[in-house]
Amino acid sequence: MLKGITKSGFEYEIADEVLDDWELFEVFAKIDRGNMTYIIEAAKMLLKDEQLNRLKEHVKQQHGKVLASAMIEEIAEIIQTNDDTKNSLSSPTL
Image 1 (cartoon, rainbow, N blue to C red):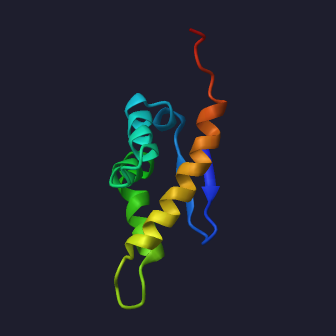
Image 2 (tube, rainbow, N blue to C red):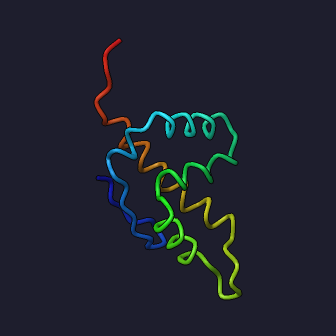
């Protein structure tokens, strides 16, 4: 289980089976190649509905808007933490 708190104070938990998902790695690869639209898909896969909705509430501004820049910053921080974790998962030797 990956547990963390972003710099802004958002607490999250990501189950091990979510981290060990080939399709999630494919999404990460698309993001790494510069296709930032896949950050939405990564967020949905990592956080699921309940946590993603809590994150939206966490970054919501006083005027009721959820700023894309704030969401991207939070999700990028979570992915970077996950990046460190995925490197520590055991991988088969080819």
